[in-house]
Image (cartoon, rainbow, N blue to C red; front, side, top):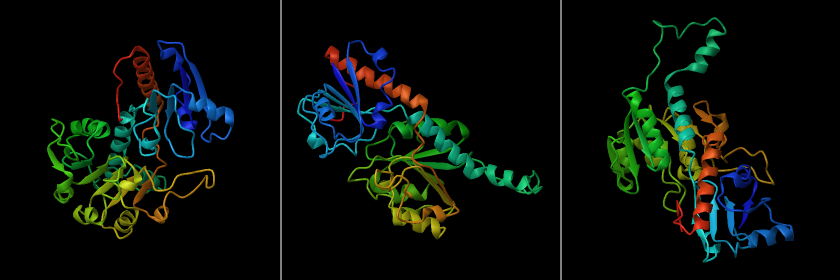
Length: 319
């Protein structure tokens, strides 16, 4: 079996994969840009393609039986270009670190670690017990928009701390971790009943720009927004207005509107000057990228390849 890893991201899952396979296989790493004729030929003849994208600029993987996305997001895969022989699958494994990232963001919003540290280094004891209160998570209500793998992992982490969990999702939610569930048709009520909002939705035509001015008008002024889904789910202009005008207390944003490419390797992540705001923490799409994520995804990718070779049902089938 010939297995091609297309692009730098996919190549991350090459080392150690062969030891997880039950079959003999040829593993080939190819660059993001398939300009070389030999690379294009190897890609088109692969039995399995491990990748994060499929576009019209690439050759078609005409021999593929499995197109394995090396992550959860499939928005960069043009499904119309898949051959009829190929099954499209994705994988997860990133829910654990993303839940921890969200917990860290929530704790930082209540406990002023950095401000207290900065002031104490100058001999300023403002935050000493008896002087000024800081917040706590217990008793707050967290709204999770998108209750899939990531949403459930976040709920599991915050519930033991006394946080009430509300969820809004396209399909009905019936989960003991959730205290109240809403459909996407009832988002105004959902926003009004929460203290903080985590966006954990994938980007689709239905979710693009879903969180916009109406959401920020409905959220309480003390709310903070955390985005670990896709940047475009939150309307960039609406988010900037809400933060710059202090309609909400703040945000922690990990997924963005602009990313590095060959032409601009170090861009700012949006057209709007988010970097000038003092009520925003910006991170470069890092929340799910840990060694644990890599190992769990290697296990999932190898499992699907073994299933393919044995004629068994594949997991996480998209198409």
